[in-house]
Image (tube, rainbow, N blue to C red; front, side, top):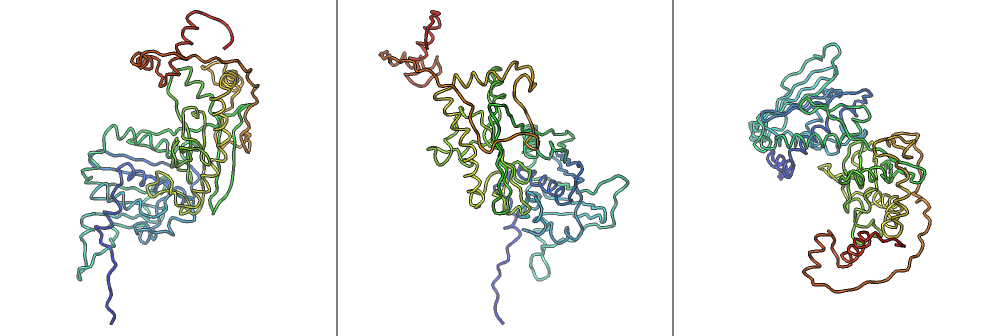
Length: 456
């Protein structure tokens, strides 16, 4: 008889590996992702609810997004890495580990209930008891019996549901649950699930408060038309939308506020994964070509939205935490090149505006705005629309508005020396970094104070 060498993992190893470097916020988002994926898997076309309630004693997540079939619950939901349960639908879950790692991380006791309209099932999971459970031979027992099962208990008008109650919260979980954490989590939910919220698919409630998602509006005018590019690569549908958000930029300037959204927003199977990104991940790198230049405030007007959709979520270029790209995926390299190609004309235009034609372009933009207090497309010349609006007219590539060339004005150089200590003080007062800017600012200030007139 051949001697066998065991490769079986231990439960402790599984729990430690699954939960290390995982934040409490990521655990909760994993649970929410499961509810959202249930909505998708069950082909629901009407609005449903996801309700999250938590305090320092327990966490309860309830959704009426279809419930879970009894056989799938028994054979797939709690298996590590179950794949067939997740594929062939445009879900966000990929590896079949989100639910398990979350309940292990958050608390000691989990009560899992689901009713799909045919069967009611209840499973009580005591993590410590399960971890130590062994058979008579001393081998670890991985399976748990259902605590309760019966025919459906749904009453009239009740929709199939899943309810997860986590009790005996771990110390880290209790310490994390604060008013500040709740506020940040609400904001994250509004952002990550904005397309489900805005498209009237799912209402999200956190501690009984309904969350309203932020909506991305495409801005268009006769001179500044948006761009839309659609392609398919390796089973992933790609849609890229780009435009210049002139209106927000002008309002921020006039109202003296800091700039709002900027850069790229990347949705994967309707869930926002990358938010307002201006990092190397989305092509903004030192050195420029073949990438975009490193992000600079002169590019604040640029907006880019990417929608990636596929019935095989394993093809999405997403990392396991669902917080960014998996840059080893082939589709990521293809997507990045396409994003840079679509964005390049916008960035070149904004660079040229900053370096050569700022006054002329600012004047052209200014004509679009009659009043900052009104939001009428007839008065501002700007049309706002959802990225799902099929009536919006797009270009296949950005074409900058025609700008008359500036007249060449003869320039003279001024050069003089002053004590370094005084120059440094002037830099602080004028909020500039270079000696050149000090000279330029002081010259302009004197010119204006004397009310002089003439060519600039």
